[in-house]
Image (cartoon, rainbow, N blue to C red; front, side, top):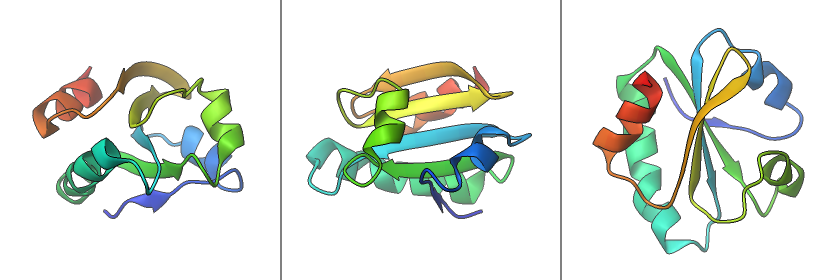
Length: 102
């Protein structure tokens, strides 16, 4: 499954997903974000059991604020509509997958 571009218009349906959700808060100008982005893409392609979305903090400051994102990249895992895990900064793929498995 491909990565979903998440914004305030589709966020409620993402949050309500039956699947475990991985959100990648990023910005185009952020170097560490560019390192994490292809890993998030790979996870989305290889793991259809997860809903994977990216949120551009420059375009969606309300969503970034709702999640208390002050540094990027920030990765957030949601299960059952609740945040169950989060990390700030670049992470290797194995750590991102471990966050999802919880």
